[in-house]
Amino acid sequence: MKEYELKIESPWNEVKAMLKEINTDLTDEDLDYEKGRERELLERLSRKMKKNLPEVKGWIESVSHNRGLAY
Figure 1 (cartoon, rainbow, N blue to C red):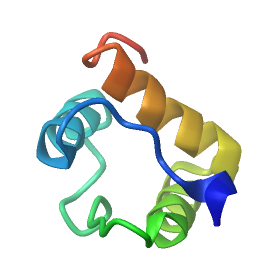
Figure 2: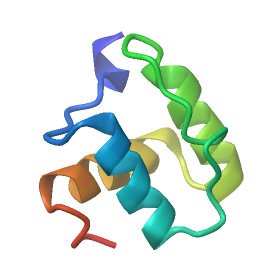
Figure 3: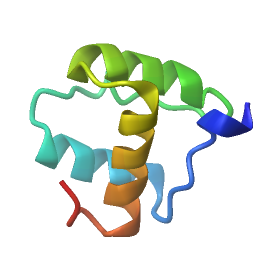
């Protein structure tokens, strides 16, 4: 669904590394991502981070757009 589509400006491997640097509790398994399966990623992170889906989506996009400067 469009509401879960991630708008990231960097390759996923770079975004994933930035997210792990910011939140050291996240693992490669937590951040496993396939295009078109964004909801699965967001739900997994939502449970782990105890945040709702829009918050997690916004965080990922913010980190991507700001090259890791958004926390």
